[in-house]
Amino acid sequence: MSSRSLAGIANRIPAQVLIVTSALIQYSGAAVAVFAFSVVEPASVAWWRGFVGGLVLCAWVRPRRGLDRATLKGALFFGIALVCMNACFYEAISRIPLGAAVSLEFLGPVMVAVVRGRGWAPRIAAFFALAGVCAIGGLGLDLSAPRTLGGVVWILAAGASWATYIVLGQKAASSSSAMTNLSLGCAFSALISAPILAPGAMVAFSDRKVLVAVIALAFLSTVFPYSLEAMAMKRVSAATFALFTALLPATSALIGAVLLRQIPSLWQLVGLVCISIAVGIASMAGRAHPDVKGVLGTEETEN
Image 1 (cartoon, rainbow, N blue to C red):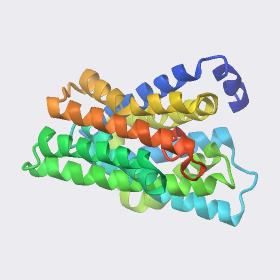
Image 2: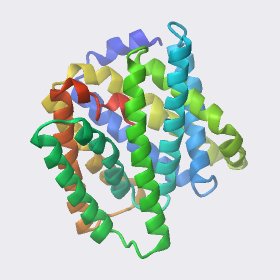
Image 3: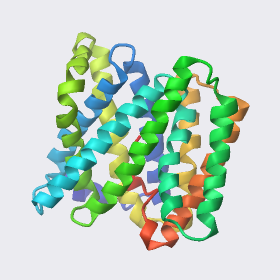
């Protein structure tokens, strides 16, 4: 089925349903990734995601038009940021709960919105983001445990990579579509990281269930959610966008509790709420000012 036919079907479905479905699918993919970590190193699982996602998206989107040197260069740097972001994220969720990891990772795009924003809204967002970090990192997680501390470091690195990914994605968007940019970025991410991550990724062939999992992961975490979001985001208001973006950390915590039996502590829940408020405020500010528009847009979302 062509992308145009899928878009026609998606247009008959409320955009809000597409966004919620996308979030549930995306974080279900993260839960599948945790299963694969028993055999494949987390960073190599990220390589599988980029490799399979790049193949599928390039075959579907067929990015041919407008592929000049500037576009390819932009996609190359975009791919580097993408593989760093996903590898750091998977290293993190192999060490700390999914809900806490996603909440802390949102610091990246929130900080981009704060730096680029104007007025009081970005400052208020920064306050709630800091409060959320203190609640999760200072009280909700045991940072005295080396593995937990390592997970926090990895997720902060993922957030920084996400911020870079957003900035590069916005620049590339002026010369190519979001789906073209994503398909090329996935392909480049797998190609660039192959010498380091691909050898470890081949271990998946030793276990059929794990091989199916890493292939399914690319569809659950990249192909399906990004496609749904790209179709939905043009049809929602700024208020609706802010609401559903702010619910993403909560969605990840729900998936973690249901699929991974990761029940968040009270302070993790407090931190999650604070960061969700920060995300909502920052996304509203991004939609209100053109210079920060799309900072928290899901066409630039990763996990």
